[in-house]
Amino acid sequence: MIVRKNQAKLTAEEKRAFTNAVLELKRTGVYDRYVNAHNYFLMTDSDSAARIGHRSPSFLPWHRRFLLDFEAALQKVDPKVSIPYWDWTVDRTPASSLWAADFMGGTSRARDGQVLDGPFAHSAGKWAITVGVDQRQYLRRTLGTGTPELPTKAEVNAVLAMPEYDTAPWNSSSNGFRNHLEGWRGVNLHNRVHVWIGGHMATAASPNDPVFWMHHAFIDMLWAEWQARHPQSTYLPATPTPNVVDLHATMAPWNNVTPADMLDHRRFYTFDTEAAGGKR
Image (cartoon, one colour):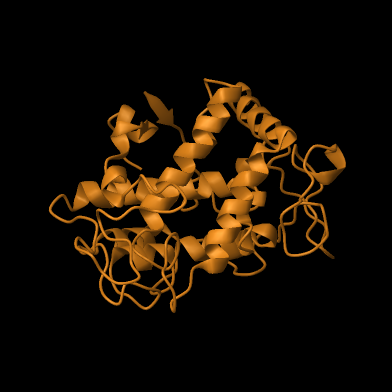
């Protein structure tokens, strides 16, 4: 069984294995397929059209499957690798080990946000951006500039306490857990982290930054925690609803996967907190 670990607890060898697998996917062109897919679905999702991966109930199951596909690709390179999660309620400054030169890198140039250190710096010669909003080929970040503070534990716990998964009109104006976690209403959790990182993470092509996977692994973990707190609540809408992926509707691009298929993460992996019997 795959165990997803807190990135702060990875050994030096585990960090190297993860970054090396990511770099190999980039070298072979596989990585950019994921960037293209996310860019396409974010750019085409809107509150005035059929929504699939964002601003809708399927935000969480869509990204769960997206991460599973990417994790499977990583494991074709190295079977020991899984996607770590980044708990940004704890590791919440640019000085956190996540941004060290032996992992994601964090030093960026003030005038344009170019990442200057770590394995994904353009100067290292292995990470050229090919899917983006302009022609610049270097990874960009502006840590803490777009918004000064990452979400806190108290803010996360307030959202986890919400008993209903989602509500009509099933979009960015909806009440309920999903939309507050995604960040269109309330304290703004998921979206705020993208803005705090800035650069490519603040665009539709956010997987250009490998920290995307660790951010979304934590979002996925929070969904699992919400499910454990509210065992009587489930994905909504449960019945066919115009322009919305209901519980048993298929999700593009797979077209053979439904939100119901994605409800139990333990079919695919566990988190290190579960394996240890502990809590976040």
